[in-house]
Amino acid sequence: MQTGQAIGQTDRRKINHHHFQPPLGRKGYHQNCSADVVAAFRLLVWYQSRALTPDLLSATLPVAMALLQIFAKPPEEGKVKTRLIPDLGKAKATKVYRHCLRYTLNLAQQSTFDYQLWLGENSNNLFFAAEQYKLQQGDDLGQRMHHALSQGLAESDAVLLIGSDCLDLTANHLTLAAEALIDNDLVLLPTFDGGFAMIGCRKINASLFSGVQWSSEHVLAQTLNNASKINYRVHLLETVRDIDTLSDLNHYPELRALVTQN
Image (spheres, rainbow, N blue to C red):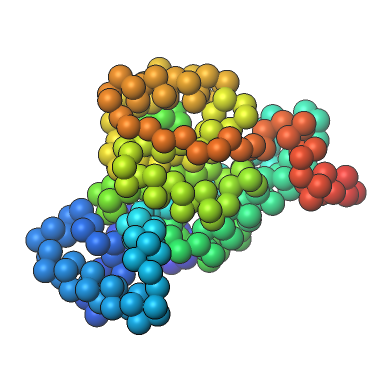
């Protein structure tokens, strides 16, 4: 399989029968439940050998069971951060996006989560030379998220989906979201502009995104309203900022420095 190329349904989360890699109880492998029991026992012994407490063990298991997905676009001038272009121009708007994308990929790579990169289109951009990726599918953002989340839930008990333009997002947010999904069906990381920077779920229904006005200040409220209609238990994390407008840049000195460079 080539790096920097679109991949199919199988990826690096394949089961290795000699090592504990897949999350416990992963959907699609219930016929091998005895292997799950053995894996769970080995994991417990591993933690006990390091004198970790049961609380730390229980806090770590949700992370092992969740898959992280990243929605991104190839960083091509004129196609990213278009709302910044009137103020900054195509080149500097692309610099901002590349910085945010690099931050997001580093966050995923340094986390304890298995992750998937989902691009909006095929790309030979060197930015993704070391990455494998899947292609988003759907006519709008809701359809694309539903498709990706559905695919993820076929492989994992829980999925976290993030964008690539939120510098406030941290590894702690990912862990808190995974833990929240123990007792909830849906977790959202709200943004100050009325949207959300992360969605996590244990199950997904297309009606969750029905009628949502994407790229508007109503996204979060409409998604929560839909969740209520289908009786989802929802957990909201703290509100964060994503990068969409020139005023957003003022909160990040590194971005201000980036766009003031000649």
